[in-house]
Amino acid sequence: MYSYSFEKLEVWHEAKEFTKNIYKLTSEFPSNEKFSLTSQLRRASISICSNIAEGSARSTNKDKAHFSTMAFSSAVEVLNQLIISNELELISNENYISSRKQLESITNKLNTLRKYQLNK
Image (cartoon, rainbow, N blue to C red; front, side, top):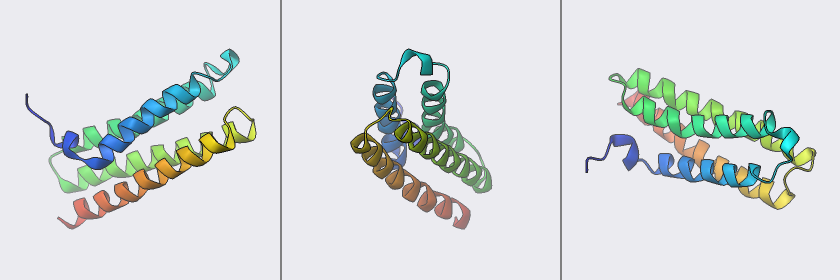
């Protein structure tokens, strides 16, 4: 089976695993959050790995870097939502810190990928 270029990126694998973790984490949110924080967190986390994938299909390095920037922006959006979720006591401090560390790793890799794309 053919592997697409994004499937070879460590940052895509990390972002995909992070998204799965967000789905598990938000499955424990109260039902009244289903259409607010649960939905927002899930959509923003999916957007991280989706933008990495979509960017890999672009023909210019500038376009690729744009999608890496979009993925980074989605990661920051998720961080904001995790902070709010933690302050509302929807997630524990332990889950918040763990998720934040995962995001830090992802954003560091996205910055490196973007710099590489722009300097190619």
